[in-house]
Length: 164
Image (cartoon, rainbow, N blue to C red; front, side):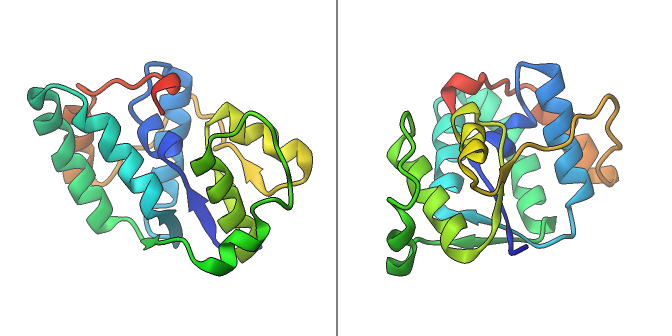
Protein backbone atom coordinates (compact mmCIF):
# COMPACT_ATOMS: atom_id res chain seq x y z
CA UNK A 1 0.00 0.00 0.00
CA UNK A 2 1.12 3.57 -0.65
CA UNK A 3 1.60 6.48 1.70
CA UNK A 4 -0.34 7.01 4.90
CA UNK A 5 -2.39 10.22 4.87
CA UNK A 6 -3.59 12.01 7.99
CA UNK A 7 -6.45 14.45 8.24
CA UNK A 8 -7.42 17.20 10.66
CA UNK A 9 -9.83 14.93 12.54
CA UNK A 10 -7.02 12.50 13.38
CA UNK A 11 -4.61 15.26 14.38
CA UNK A 12 -7.14 17.16 16.49
CA UNK A 13 -8.53 13.85 17.72
CA UNK A 14 -5.64 13.79 20.21
CA UNK A 15 -7.62 16.58 21.91
CA UNK A 16 -11.07 15.09 21.44
CA UNK A 17 -13.72 15.55 24.10
CA UNK A 18 -14.29 11.79 23.71
CA UNK A 19 -11.65 9.88 25.73
CA UNK A 20 -11.81 6.79 23.48
CA UNK A 21 -11.14 8.88 20.37
CA UNK A 22 -8.42 10.85 22.18
CA UNK A 23 -6.61 7.64 23.21
CA UNK A 24 -6.85 6.07 19.74
CA UNK A 25 -5.55 9.19 18.01
CA UNK A 26 -2.71 9.72 20.47
CA UNK A 27 -1.82 6.03 20.16
CA UNK A 28 -1.57 6.42 16.39
CA UNK A 29 0.85 9.33 16.68
CA UNK A 30 2.97 7.68 19.38
CA UNK A 31 3.40 4.58 17.21
CA UNK A 32 3.85 6.51 13.94
CA UNK A 33 6.13 9.25 15.24
CA UNK A 34 9.03 8.23 13.01
CA UNK A 35 7.10 6.54 10.20
CA UNK A 36 6.49 8.54 7.02
CA UNK A 37 3.07 10.16 6.74
CA UNK A 38 1.44 12.81 4.54
CA UNK A 39 -0.87 15.69 5.39
CA UNK A 40 -2.27 18.10 2.82
CA UNK A 41 -1.91 21.83 3.38
CA UNK A 42 -5.71 22.02 3.53
CA UNK A 43 -5.81 19.61 6.49
CA UNK A 44 -2.97 21.43 8.28
CA UNK A 45 -4.85 24.68 7.75
CA UNK A 46 -8.08 23.17 9.06
CA UNK A 47 -6.30 22.30 12.32
CA UNK A 48 -5.06 25.88 12.63
CA UNK A 49 -8.52 27.25 11.87
CA UNK A 50 -10.04 25.29 14.75
CA UNK A 51 -7.28 26.25 17.19
CA UNK A 52 -7.22 29.92 16.18
CA UNK A 53 -10.91 30.05 17.06
CA UNK A 54 -10.02 29.42 20.70
CA UNK A 55 -9.01 32.00 23.30
CA UNK A 56 -5.36 33.04 23.16
CA UNK A 57 -4.68 31.32 26.52
CA UNK A 58 -5.68 27.94 25.01
CA UNK A 59 -3.62 28.58 21.87
CA UNK A 60 -0.56 29.35 23.99
CA UNK A 61 -0.96 26.02 25.80
CA UNK A 62 -1.59 24.05 22.61
CA UNK A 63 0.91 25.39 20.07
CA UNK A 64 4.17 24.38 21.82
CA UNK A 65 3.03 20.75 21.55
CA UNK A 66 1.98 21.09 17.92
CA UNK A 67 5.21 22.88 17.00
CA UNK A 68 7.44 20.21 18.53
CA UNK A 69 5.29 17.36 17.20
CA UNK A 70 5.47 18.72 13.64
CA UNK A 71 9.27 19.00 14.05
CA UNK A 72 9.64 15.40 15.30
CA UNK A 73 6.89 13.70 13.29
CA UNK A 74 7.96 12.31 9.92
CA UNK A 75 5.18 14.12 8.05
CA UNK A 76 5.37 15.42 4.50
CA UNK A 77 3.08 18.34 3.78
CA UNK A 78 1.58 18.31 0.31
CA UNK A 79 -0.47 20.59 -1.89
CA UNK A 80 -3.07 19.45 -4.38
CA UNK A 81 -1.94 18.72 -7.93
CA UNK A 82 -3.90 18.72 -11.18
CA UNK A 83 -3.48 14.94 -11.46
CA UNK A 84 -5.26 14.54 -8.10
CA UNK A 85 -8.43 16.00 -9.57
CA UNK A 86 -8.83 13.16 -12.07
CA UNK A 87 -10.04 10.94 -9.23
CA UNK A 88 -12.42 13.52 -7.75
CA UNK A 89 -15.58 12.00 -9.20
CA UNK A 90 -14.39 8.41 -9.36
CA UNK A 91 -16.38 7.62 -6.22
CA UNK A 92 -19.38 9.97 -6.03
CA UNK A 93 -20.03 9.87 -2.30
CA UNK A 94 -22.84 11.93 -0.87
CA UNK A 95 -22.60 13.99 2.29
CA UNK A 96 -18.93 14.91 1.94
CA UNK A 97 -17.56 18.43 2.16
CA UNK A 98 -15.51 19.65 -0.83
CA UNK A 99 -12.24 19.41 1.13
CA UNK A 100 -13.09 15.83 2.12
CA UNK A 101 -13.72 14.91 -1.52
CA UNK A 102 -10.42 16.52 -2.50
CA UNK A 103 -8.58 14.59 0.21
CA UNK A 104 -10.10 11.29 -0.94
CA UNK A 105 -9.14 12.17 -4.49
CA UNK A 106 -5.50 12.72 -3.47
CA UNK A 107 -5.41 9.47 -1.49
CA UNK A 108 -6.97 7.58 -4.39
CA UNK A 109 -4.72 9.19 -7.01
CA UNK A 110 -1.56 8.31 -5.10
CA UNK A 111 -2.57 4.79 -4.04
CA UNK A 112 -2.35 5.76 -0.40
CA UNK A 113 -4.55 5.16 2.61
CA UNK A 114 -6.26 7.67 4.85
CA UNK A 115 -6.36 7.35 8.63
CA UNK A 116 -9.19 9.39 10.11
CA UNK A 117 -11.82 9.56 12.83
CA UNK A 118 -14.14 11.63 10.62
CA UNK A 119 -17.38 9.59 10.39
CA UNK A 120 -18.21 10.93 6.91
CA UNK A 121 -14.83 9.82 5.57
CA UNK A 122 -14.97 6.47 7.38
CA UNK A 123 -18.17 5.69 5.45
CA UNK A 124 -16.05 5.90 2.28
CA UNK A 125 -14.42 2.60 3.21
CA UNK A 126 -17.73 0.91 2.39
CA UNK A 127 -17.31 2.26 -1.17
CA UNK A 128 -13.97 0.48 -1.42
CA UNK A 129 -11.79 3.49 -0.68
CA UNK A 130 -8.66 3.01 1.45
CA UNK A 131 -9.94 4.75 4.59
CA UNK A 132 -9.47 3.43 8.11
CA UNK A 133 -9.61 4.55 11.71
CA UNK A 134 -6.76 4.33 14.21
CA UNK A 135 -6.70 1.24 16.39
CA UNK A 136 -8.62 1.63 19.63
CA UNK A 137 -6.42 1.92 22.67
CA UNK A 138 -7.23 1.59 26.34
CA UNK A 139 -3.90 2.91 27.52
CA UNK A 140 -1.53 4.80 25.33
CA UNK A 141 2.21 4.79 25.65
CA UNK A 142 3.57 8.27 26.28
CA UNK A 143 5.36 10.43 23.77
CA UNK A 144 9.09 10.95 24.38
CA UNK A 145 9.66 13.00 27.57
CA UNK A 146 9.52 16.64 26.43
CA UNK A 147 6.75 15.96 23.93
CA UNK A 148 4.62 14.15 26.53
CA UNK A 149 4.94 17.08 28.91
CA UNK A 150 3.87 19.48 26.16
CA UNK A 151 1.01 17.16 25.21
CA UNK A 152 -0.34 17.11 28.76
CA UNK A 153 -0.21 20.91 28.82
CA UNK A 154 -1.93 21.08 25.41
CA UNK A 155 -4.93 19.13 26.68
CA UNK A 156 -6.36 22.50 27.69
CA UNK A 157 -7.66 22.37 24.10
CA UNK A 158 -10.72 20.18 23.75
CA UNK A 159 -12.27 19.55 20.34
CA UNK A 160 -15.63 18.07 19.42
CA UNK A 161 -15.80 16.05 16.17
CA UNK A 162 -18.46 18.32 14.77
CA UNK A 163 -15.94 21.20 14.69
CA UNK A 164 -13.55 19.40 12.38
